[in-house]
Image 1: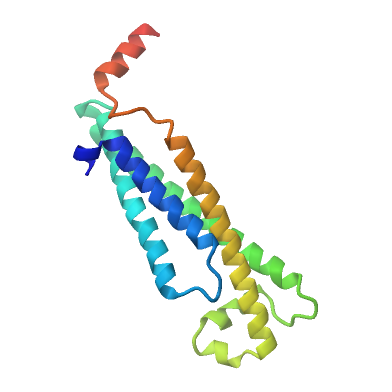
Image 2 (image 1 turned 135 degrees about the horizontal axis):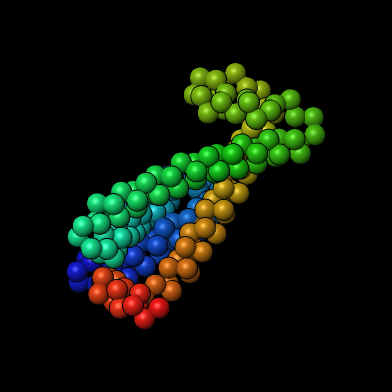
Length: 181
């Protein structure tokens, strides 16, 4: 697809799929079907596949043959670092959101630590109806706020990447620009 449509179009398609999937997740509720979740996650997964491939090729094509290994390593390292930081930030956001939502419920006899009981198939049966409803509502609200954050980041990435120039950067163009400067 990259050869037929070009790197910019393929990258923008990938980012568009990610944004569409992330925005779609913000509209999900507890009553949404698993098929809807599957389709939205498929959009995100295919989008990440397109985008990561294109950006790896762009990173490799923007340097000479003698620096491609270093360029690929840097690209892979920054992607891994971003994933690590992203998991930490999103996990912290989810935990803080759940704790905040539970604290806002007057008289709730549950805390964020009890969320594991809700997620455990056997532990959920030990919860009272009120505790289950409180934890379920907090988890749904926390995930909804997380999906909103994901959608904002995905749309921002799409907007920023729309400023990329057409085609792959060539080493000759870059050297000419450096000589002019």
